[in-house]
Image (cartoon, rainbow, N blue to C red; front, side, top):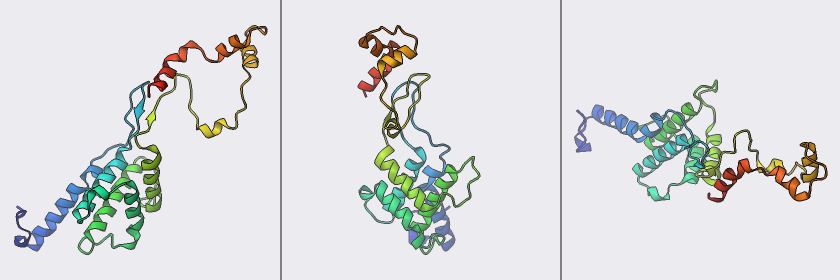
Length: 206
């Protein structure tokens, strides 16, 4: 049994076991994670969360606090910076640098989980790529609300819409086989059918 109550009373062997167990507990959030997926509900708005990044963040935050820093100061940008800075430290020496050793291990576990089912190498993606992914996630993607389109429809990046010319409602109605003499109002009604009204209403309520 490891003596937890007093660090001074532990033998070297017990201290080593304690550090190993403590490290396993700190990064257990990443190690036990199976998959990363957004929180989804069919045909309803959902909030996007990347479970793997969230678990890595929490593990890194725990390590940050264990190293004597204020956990309230730890955010996504700081996590990215810490990961980019790993190459400047002794990440393979637990005794010399336990903080960066543990953080490097947590990042590697994240990398392994991300590569599951692929032929990517052990070192892919590099720390710099992971750091940029984390920045993008916390600045642009985290907790955004996603609304699934109606069945049979697709979503595309809004930038692509700039390359699509404006649709002439009358030409569209004629192409769909409607009376060439239909009014402009009738032509417009062709584009927006009643089947999608519920979907558009859900967008208004977001």
